[in-house]
Image 1 (cartoon, rainbow, N blue to C red):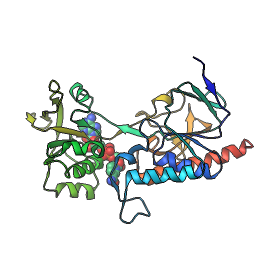
Image 2 (image 1 turned 135 degrees about the vertical axis):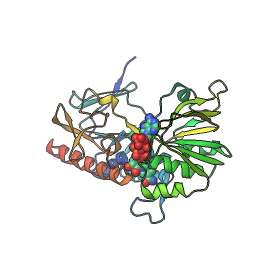
Image 3 (image 1 turned 90 degrees about the horizontal axis):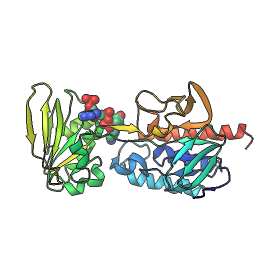
Length: 319
Ligand code: NDP
């Protein structure tokens, strides 16, 4: 099979979440005609969230998907090109950088890595077998299917609280199962969940098995209390995961520096290195490099920074 190659691009952006699209807006306004590869989760985490109340400029809040849609419109209005095609491989040793997208090969002088982070799973065989049959990591996508059911939400951070609160619209009862004694959730989110009459809590509790594999339908959870060593079954018909995210950086693992958890190591938020030496023309932004703040506004901020660095770099190259 022959591959096709196109003229060298100035800027390719991997990912179409808040950071990638902000980078696209800035790069497009600098006339760099960026190509945005939307990735496996177009729109990133905002596209599967509900009301975003802390993005400045929206006093009443804004729905995550609406915010993303507006960012896409803004980026394409200035000349960004959005593509649903998937990156097959990347070679950052070559100059210009070489990206293989199916049968197409794209060369680019600069690359912004904004591929974000994906939902984490418990990785129990029974959980994996029941994904799509009552096990989900996306309350916004699948909440409707839990209508009238008793459900469990796993996790003790803001994601779990947000999911649980959202799911009370559908479920008859929501049990939040936290493996620790304490919660990582912010006080405001925790208080909202604690005061909700449909939400109950289990602490120090691990899920050992999701019941219903044979029936291809969640029937309950086998639970274990880490403190009392008690084991029991909780009859639920749906389980949602809200236990954090993994950075989508595996494709880069031999080509740029990642930390022990797989996040891209960056200097001054966006500069990427290889074996401790700063690379030219490669930048990372958003959740793939931010394990500390992980907010839409900080992702947007680093997206902006990455695009400004691309501009500077291309200027230095004489573009
Ligand atoms: P966090 O890392 O904050 O919390 C993850 C939770 O999942 C912890 O309770 C952790 O338990 C638990 N957990 C992790 N792995 C497992 C496992 N294998 N089995 C069982 N439990 C597990 O992640 P979040 O996604 O909740 O939040 C990430 C960031 O995004 C935070 O900064 C948060 O504030 C922000 N956020 C903000 C929202 C908003 O403002 N609307 C909404 C959602 C997120 P343990 O404590 O024991 O490690």
